[in-house]
Length: 384
Ligand code: ATP
Image 1 (spheres, rainbow, N blue to C red):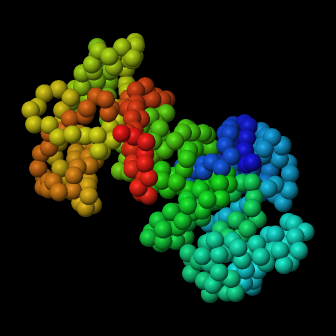
Image 2 (image 1 turned 45 degrees about the vertical axis):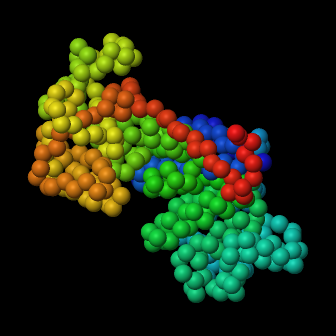
Image 3 (image 1 turned 60 degrees about the vertical axis):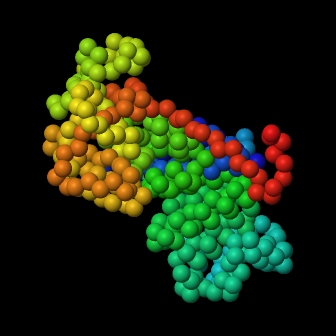
C-alpha cells in the first residue's frame, strides 16, 4: 500500500517581510503505485508541499494520511517515506555502499549481514555494484544520483518523494536517467511524488501531473488531459513547448474580434458560450495552426520574424500587431524570414479563456487512438 491523502494542506512561513503562504489549501489523493509529478514555476510551493509530506516542515493547517493513518505530526523517521534530493545529500566520508546502508541502520533493527545483502541486491538491480566501495567525491553527478536513488530504494518505503532529482545532470544524462527512473518506478510499483519545474519532465514521466502556481493547485490530471483540456490560461501556457499562443479578443454577436482579424464562431460553439460577451483570450497551440491560401475569415496574414529549424519540426515566429507568436510546421518545409504567411486557426483546436479570471471557457479535447499491436513472440492473438 502507499496511498497518500492530503487534505486542505496550508503552509505559512513567517519572516521579516511578514507572512508567506507557500501552500494554500492543497488537497490530493494518490493511488498505490502511482507516479505523480508536481510541476510549476519557481516559488509555486512544490518543494514545501513535498517537505510537509516528508515531515521536514510542520503543517500550518490540514492533514496528511498515509494508508489511512494520520501522519501529519509524525517525525520524518516515523513515516514510511524515503526522499531523494536534488543535491544527492550523500555523506562524503562514507562509501556509496555505506551511504545506502545508513538509512536502514538508523531506521531499523535489521542485522548487519541482512543490510549488506539488501544493499547488494539493490545495487545489482540498479547496475551500480561497482560503485559501492567508492566515496561520493570519486563519482560523477549521474553516479551520485544513482547512489542517492539506491539509498531510497533499499529502504523499500511505501512512498518515494523526489525533489528535482535530475536537475544537476547535463541534458543528455537527464533524459537517460528519466527513462531509468520511470522503469525502476514501474518495476518497484512504489507510489512516487516527483517535483520538477520542467514541464517536459512532468509530461513524460507522470501518470498524473499536479500543476501549482502561487501555492495554489491549478489542475490535476493525466498529461494529455492537462495538455488538451487545460483548466485555465496558466496551465495552458505552462504545459507545452513552445507555449500556447494567446490573443486578446472581444466577443460580441458571435464574433471574436482582434485588432488584426475577426473570427466568427460556429453555432454549436456559440451555444456552449451562452450569454458570454466582453473580453476573452483566444489560445491556440503552435502545432494547431494551419496554413491557408484563400483569405477570408478566421485567417491571419502575418510576417515571419524568426525561423528555428529543429529537424523534425520548424518553429516559425510571426508577428501580429507588434506581438510575436509561434507556429510549428514540418521540418522539411522551408520558410523565409520576412515572408508573409496566411494562417488559419481551426475552430476545434482553439481555446477560449475568461480574460479576467483566466478560467477556460472552451478547450480542445483529448482524443487518443489506441494502437493494436501484434505480439512479438508470434503467439496467436485470437483475432481473425
Ligand atoms: P523552487 O522550484 O524554486 O524550489 P518551489 O516551487 O519548490 O520553488 P518552495 O520552495 O516550496 O517553492 O517555496 C514556496 C514559497 O515559500 C516561496 O515564496 C519561498 O520563498 C517560500 N519559502 C520556502 N521556504 C521558506 C522558509 N523556510 N522561510 C520563508 N519562506 C519560505
